[in-house]
Image (cartoon, rainbow, N blue to C red; front, side, top):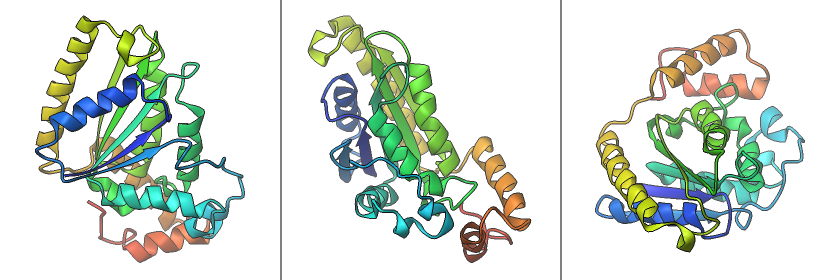
Length: 232
């Protein structure tokens, strides 16, 4: 199993340490890990130029940085996205990255490799806000077509990992153990769930009517998705 991790901050706090627990638990299954830290590896805001929509993702002014992360995700079997809760939502750095991948939402040009991947979204907070932070990230993963998505959110009652109480760390470790087993089991045969399939067929219907722009419609035709071919 190959893993790509996208950290929503460069700070190596609770979310980072929970990722390390997962990687340790999965180490016998994992052959390669690629890690991306934001904003270090994606430092630009989306300019709203719409070049990725209307022409190609290669036309993005930030293509050099975006393409490295895209390539890392395409190679991976498991995508791990993390973010501490910032003002009840994902970090601005994470939102900036997801903005750059709006072109591969189902309504536009979904990346066919995503349909057979597993996603894992990890969030932590000193208090609350994990649900909304999960939603910020899972919305994108779902509309990318990621086949199976797991989530782990934990209020750690601390602003750093060293300050997390022992009993809370033990509870997190047990949860990591259970979820790691589920991920290993799911990795044997990843197929999209009902939500992803419904989204695909709705967008297929829209594309058969001409879609929203020629770049998207031509992409769907090239993939064969308007006929009998499916990305799973």
